[in-house]
Image 1 (tube, rainbow, N blue to C red):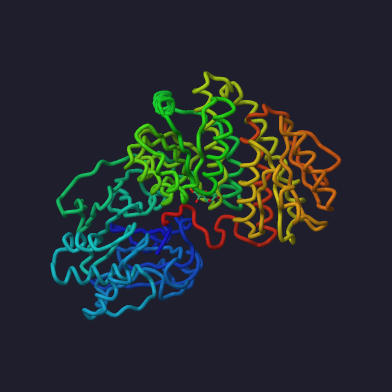
Image 2 (cartoon, rainbow, N blue to C red):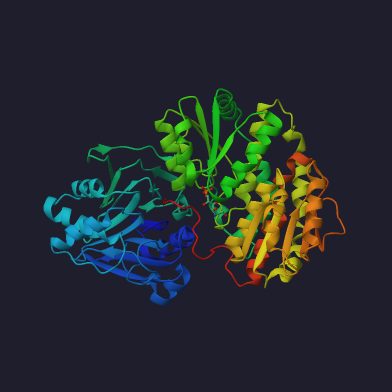
Length: 590
Ligand code: AGP
């Protein structure tokens, strides 16, 4: 499977309506297909189909499935096409066990071959169906659910989280490197990929450790370790407010999250002094520092390199997490890995950190979810505090991550930025940029039929050009490319003609004149230029005004017009801004 959402419920209420609501809350994890299994009078009823939760729930009347126990799933396909048969839940041959799964069973082909040899027959093309048949096989031999799950987990290669229901109304599950959390409302239990799956019913949760096993029979919840020995785990109070995941007055989560930045950026600057000191001490004692992340979080790492160099005179090396293995030879006990991740569950980031930890490195992280796997394996972590980010495209988490970095670097260089004295200026700058929305809508109208967009930026502004291009790619499906301004004449200029659209990020700082000459070079090839700056120039055909602002802080705010542009372009292209095709919010597979 891949990056999916799984949910299980057992309690005094009808399970189906609760499961449907939970799946809606977690749909950003995967939205190719949906399915639910409930149990009544020992019979397992499964309904599943291709499409999003609201649509499939209506078509298949999922809400009215019987029973007070059930499991549910939304899929982001990797193994097997997007079909009803490949949707979860998957059953064993006897239909006495149904399973939902998140992760990848890397050895599913061998396991499937052995199971077929011992008489099992498979319906789907997925790797996940193997777990249903394996559990059925082990249970038929051992007649002990805990030991059967122990055997299943020992046979699975790869990261996984799965929840299974048995005809006798038992619900159980286990995890390895994929999140699985128990929610503790009154009168029942949830088992979920994400706290958002049960946050509207309770903020009390148990975060399972790797290879923990949970079994709920009758009204009892029991936990076991990977050998089947009974264990207890602490209950955590989840920090998020109930309504934080709702759209409120906004048409989409993405637009709400863009507008939330006038508050969330300031929240990112509020860090617990003790945690901040510990974080900085570990940085100061490092002989080498690598900053790693994926996607938007990697763009934050690239920008951090510039700010560390410029202000703290500290050399850090940004490394894309999926490319991390090439630096492993240089990592040792004097190295620090600073990992950035909104979700704290991105497999490429977790793998990088695990390898580095094995080599003795210290792990620091900046996360938005303080209970995430990355936070839990870090020696010290700081939180972005921007609340749940539902829109698949990272927006407020990016500026929040930057705000944390500015706060860390300000501490490292004895308030050289004076970030706290700039809170007001930052808030009004963001307010002003959010008010350019009308303008970005007009520019979106100009760009809706364009095939390629190029975004230029130099030094601090280059990572912002990359981030702006990523937002346009993932929200509008238009090819967009972020280019280091000085590089344009070393090749990309060949792409430019009078149909080309080029966005130039060029606020007044020490890069201004160079980038302005690049803009003229491009203009002379007939391109249409959109300038984002605090100084207008004739060379721009369209202009988005940035406020006059502390030049070192421009990256914190200059991304906002590009976020708004990508959002409104998506609307103009009838793309769903919250659930872009083929993507998922946290990529928990390699
Ligand atoms: C960004 O808009 C994308 N959703 C994606 O690139 C994302 O930044 C990446 O998958 C990393 O996610 P993380 O910050 O949760 O680790």
